[in-house]
Image 1 (cartoon, rainbow, N blue to C red):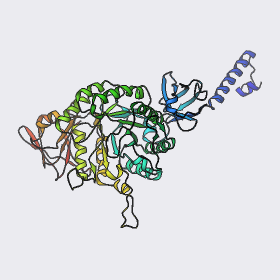
Image 2 (image 1 turned 90 degrees about the vertical axis):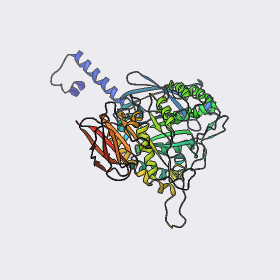
Image 3 (image 1 turned 180 degrees about the horizontal axis):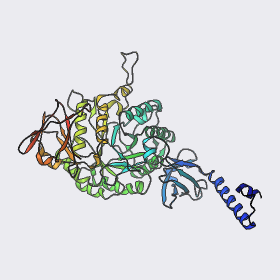
Image 4 (image 1 turned 45 degrees about the vertical axis):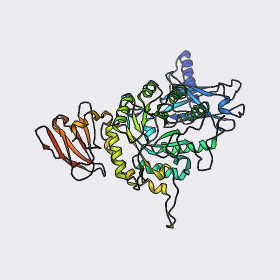
Length: 538
């Protein structure tokens, strides 16, 4: 009768068989509910982490064993995840679930006698996304299907605006790094680009010991864990460059086998964060191409790890070889390209997004000159590259931030470190205009109009750039110096909507057209560099 009373039907007795089935059903449901409450919950696109205690202490953990886990999704798909050593006998697995439902996992250790790491299992329940941040709402970053830009997993476009901060993550205090992240996010940056080695961190410690048998420094990497989390929390993608020095040159401190160990360690440790990986092709020499073809698939293929960017080789033959490598998600390029180098890049990068990773450095003396690079120089470089090469994104650099310069003005009783003041240089503020302009447009549909630019602009003028959609429903023309932009009539759609954009402050003005027999002239509202935005009328 207790069962019947629970079901609310005690006043109407039922056959004993029905009563037994009803009690059995309630028992099963109650048991399932009780069991389900023991399963930890993890919101979609939020990191799951599990620690394990090794049965043994390894003198060289990375070389002594390989620790992995297989995560089985709610629909039965297997995901292989690398584990990592975190000091003493502690090992960890991190994973970013991308599908709601019940997940299970089981570990594997190459040292099968290590019961603490071998054949450990667990489960968790992936729930609905939770939070208001960029990544918790939209998911991790990946190359879009059109292979021309980046997007979140839910399809939301991700316009790449990276701040070059090579030494900043290592040399900043947690409080300083938090201020940096908050300011850059407010300035519409979407990523920060920093290096792991070489160099010591704020505590004077290095990433690893013994370059012949690499031993990671767990405390060094734990501090960087927190730095990545700070970036992700404010909506900044963490672009990890494993081997770049403060002179902004590629730096390879390790033999190939130990380099492989370190890269695997970084991917295992940070692959479940919202990161991208910046690697260097070393100019595309035969040795470098062979090197990346050998270790790239071993480290990056088939793992959860974030987009991989490789600097575009300087020769087309090397580019063709590397283009076949499926683990490369995008290409990176260096600034200051001439017309021939530009043609090589556009040809070699077919099928992958293209991103600049260095820019002219604001407030640094220009090479061979006593003058410093200013916001005007940077703005013109950024807009030119976006329209001449790729609309997928851009980058910005200021010297004191990239090197994390703590210098104070001794003539002032109260002063901010130079890195802090450099966060507010005019060039950084002008990126708000870039962000708002491109995010208001279907920028991923734009293609550089390099091949036809010469017919659209007055011959002999440098610095002009253009991009357009395939059907010319949207075109952008960057007018660098001339007070008048002249376009041939076929370059314009019928009844176009025409707007001048001031790249300095974001001001917009309606464009006035002066018709000619075969062309149209557009006077700029005032001196300066302007972008003419041409849209087809609805």
